[in-house]
Length: 163
Image (cartoon, rainbow, N blue to C red; front, side, top):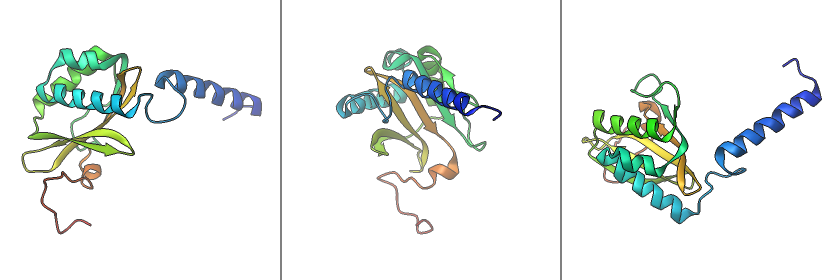
C-alpha cells in the first residue's frame, strides 16, 4: 500500500470512524431493539407490496442506502441508491415492474428479513434492513438467482434435486 505502519493505522482508524457514523453505532447488525426492527420490517414489506412511495419514504432514514445484488443475471441497480426519496421511488418501481405473489417474513443471521415469492412459489428476491434511530438506514436486496436458489418459501413444494 506504500504506507508507513503509522499511516496504515490512521487509515484503519478513520475507516472505523466512518463505518460507525454511517451505521449509527459500532458493531452489530442493527441499532434497534428486535421489536422495533421487526415492526419496521413489517411496515416496509407492506409498503413495498403496495408500491407506496410515501410510506417507504417515512420508513427510510434521509441518508438511507439501498444496495442490490443481481449478479448480472437479474435486474438490479448497478450502484447503491442513496437517500430516502430515491430509494423509495426505486423500491416502488421494482414492486411495479416485478410483481410477486406474496411477501414472506423470515430471518437472516438473526435479523428480520423479507422474501419476495413469485407465482410459481420460487423466491424472487430477499431483503434485510439495518435499522438505527427508528428508521431503515441500509437495505440490502439480493436478486441473484444462484444465491436465491438455496432459499425456499414456507409453502413451496420440496424440490428433490435440492439438498
